[in-house]
Each structure stands twice: as C-alpha cells, then as structure tokens.
Image (cartoon, rainbow, N blue to C red; front, side, top):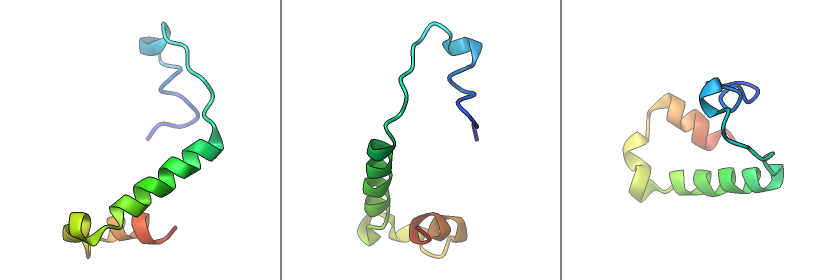
Length: 59
C-alpha cells in the first residue's frame, strides 16, 4: 500500500492540509476494529481464510 505518507504528498491533495496522526488514538482505533472483526456472528464466514486469520488473530 502507501508508504511514508506518499498519498498525502500526492499532487492530487496539494490543496489540503493534513495533521499528524496521534499514535495513541490510532492504536485505539485499530484495537476497536480488530475486536469488531473478531465477532464470529458478523465475520464467521471469513474463518479458514489464512490472510484474514493472520490479520485478526496474530496481534
């Protein structure tokens, strides 16, 4: 995917101002998303798909 903010450095977005990301907030959002993704009722159909399981359970 994108590395080192190359997306925000694109000329397409030169008219926009971006703030630095608060790492604590980012970690919190990631953990909340992972908790939701681990919900078997909602995402049980992904069971057995190795990339998904690696993403969700190896954290």
